Image 1: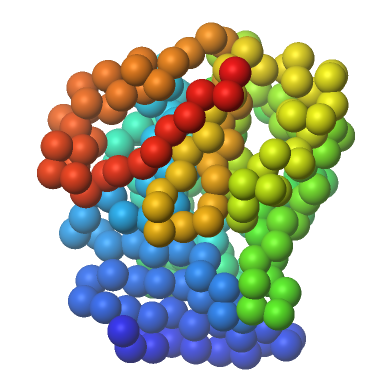
Image 2: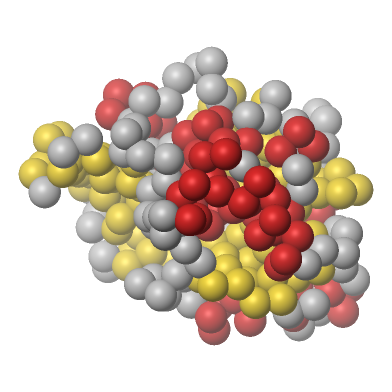
Length: 249
């Protein structure tokens, strides 16, 4: 894998690396995005951020919010496979937004991008509620990712207020410990917000993807919806898209 672009700005070091058509974004050594336009799936965590959209049928996912754009890998996945009417992306790093457009193929026709701090932006948001919110907010510290927003009751309450009545909340956690320490497992008021809770993971990553639904659902319903999608179903059969799922509520 070769470095095709690099820059240090205000003490932060950015790299874009390539291997064939694949592009990877690193910030201070932390791996933020991977995208290959020739592949339907990334083979990484970004697939698991997109997969929960299929707890619903794609035609019912019309308005999507992505908190933490990075290089935009999940935006590509949503645009290609879910085809919502609107995708809104909020990203603190102006450099990430620049690189998403320059190297990762993100265009204004795909997504409405905002350079902003996610909590402030969502507190000020007055628009239509979202069918799907993907929260992937991470910074870098000593070469390791860390959560930019604590998954406490205040944060879940704000996210929940911006979900519609059938909404799906997807959150990336760096570990099982981080996931289980979140408010949805430890605060009674937060627990009441969601009727179904799942965890998704891949064997090669420590990350846990938390999925929180305001309506009852099941892993079998997710599988059937994924298999029914022409391109996603093919990738499942070819073992290009794989995941482990566990229902916790």
